[in-house]
Length: 223
Length: 79
Image (tube, rainbow over all chains, first blue to last red; front, top):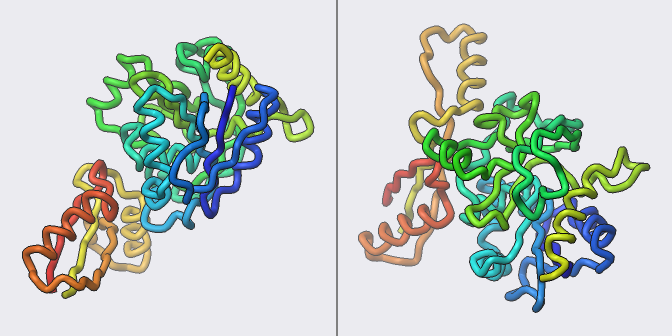
C-alpha cells in the first residue's frame, strides 16, 4: 500500500499517521506539504491527519480545504482513490466537499479529550472490513468541533446506503444520531473524529487502531 | 470600496454558543432574552470601484469560502 500524509501548518497527528501506515503496510508513507501542487504518482491512499490546520481560523478545516494540494486530493478521490481524514482531517474533507454535512462546536462547548467507546456500524468498506459490525472499540478522541450535523434527509440517505461507519455509544459532542464517522458514496473516503492512528502501540494504550490500517492495507494490496 | 459580510447560522441549526451567552445574560439579571444567535462579521477592502461588480465578487467569496452554506447564511453590505 503506497500512502501519503498531507501536512498543513498546524497538523499535529501527521507523524502518528505515518507510523500507523508504515506499521500496517511495511511501506514508508510519503509526507506531502500542503503547498505542493500535485500528489506523488502511484498512491493507493491519501490521509489527512488531525491537528489545528491554520489555527482553525474562519472555520475548522476551511482554509486547509482550499490549499493548493487539496485540488489534487479532490481529483484523486473523484477518480476512485482512497482517502482517510481523521479529526481535523474529517473537518477538511467536509469543507472540501468530499463528504456531506458539517462539523460544529461540541454541544457542551468544551474541548473533549478522552477515550471514547465507539461502535463499528459497517464492515463493508476497505477501512472497516477487518472489524465486525456492532463491534465496540475504545478510541481516543480530542476535539472542540466534532459535533456532526446532518439534516433528516441526509441522515436517512447515510443510513439507507450503510454509510455510517462509526457511532459513539455515549455521545461526547452532540452529533446527529451519535455519528462518529461516515463514508463517501463510493465507500472509498472515510472521515472520522476518533483517532485510530493514536492507538498503534501497546505502550501508548493499545493497538486497536492498527486494525483499520491493516484492513486498508489488505484491501489495497492488489491495487 | 468596502464590503461587510455577516455570517450567521441558519434557522434551525442549534447554536450552543448563542445558548451559553443567553444563559449568561439571564444570570446577570437581564430577563426576557428569548434567544441569542451568534455569528461573525467580516470586513473587506476591495480595489474594485464598480459597486455591482464588487458585490457580485463578494457573494462568490461567501459561497466559496467565507460561509459554509450547509449550516450558515450570509448577508453582504456594500459600504
